[in-house]
Amino acid sequence: MNVEVDPLIEALYYWSDVSGVLLMGIIGGTLARQRGYDIVGFFFIAMFSSLGGGMIRDVLINRGTVAAMSQPEYLYLAFAGALIARFIYFKGRTWDYIQSHGDAVVSALWAATGTVKALTYGLPLIPCVMMGVFTATGGSMIRDICMGREPAVFGDNQPTVIPAVACSAVVLVANSLDSLAWGMLVGPVASFVLTMLGIWAGWRVPARQEWAPLNDTAAQVMVLARKAEDKSRAVGRRLEPTKLRAWRHQQMEKALQRRIEKQVRAGRRRTEAASDVSDFMEAFAEDVAEMHQDPTPDAAESHGFLDGIGVDISGDSYENYDEESQQLSLDGSKVQRDILDMILADEKLTDELVERLVKRYEERNQG
Image 1: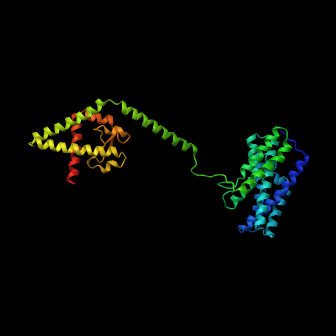
Image 2 (image 1 turned 45 degrees about the vertical axis):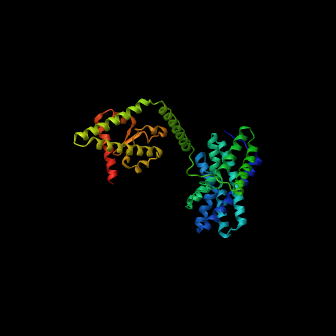
Image 3 (image 1 turned 180 degrees about the vertical axis):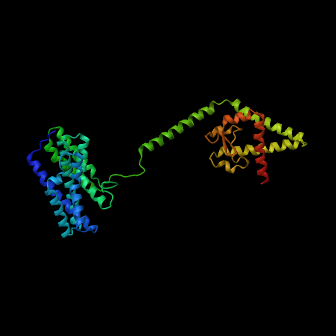
């Protein structure tokens, strides 16, 4: 692909480009002074600042010699900028103003030149944008890494990549409309304006570490699913036959009656055995009622001999039915309602359940 550029615009770009190399060399040298580097550090930091982006671009395109090597004036200007920064200490508010605005102008121009060069070698759209971004920001990234700093283009900083992307996009759109000359003029202006707005308005690219919309959406879906599950359980509670509840009561009453008969055969008076069973059932009913009024996971720990045991015999728990109230816990194990029904269907298992409950009731009274 052969991209034709107006000679006047090409000349303007060239002189702006070499001026940008000199300015970035001075900026790099000033940063080297602030870090206490010697003259070697001045030269290297100035070279990375002013030529690093173009070197990355040319290496990735892999078409011919890197421009900084084939056109020695680039190296001369970069080193000249380092020498100027070595002999003149640029500082103060005026220098900060010149540095920020000059950097914005140079980055805007380099974003356009990188995109145009990628178009010249026939690269697709996305690589063209990448070449524009690398040309505009690659030098500062290499410089920051060599200086042991986190690259300024990363993490909650003023936007520099976004203006470069905007410039590349304008150039690509203009090229598709056969108006590349206009794109090379408008693109850098758009990039410069965005960069200045970021500086003046204090814009920052957000870097919220916990921001994860897919995770938040999944959590919301889980909440909705839980609500739907609770509604379905409520429907199930209303539809559950009352005969099942009555059967549970009958099984418990039969087990308690068998306990009375067993104690009578052991020589105990029937009235005393029946009285003990009656007291047990009253305490049992009170503890079950308290558990249903407070269905929190830690509630069972405060309900006497029902500590660790959740049994729905009275049927009142169906008013506040949840995952905890549908379970029976014996010796730390969780048993679902259907397993409870299996226990109540077997006389020996039911007698053992009653025996454990009575034992805990007696232990509580003794304590």
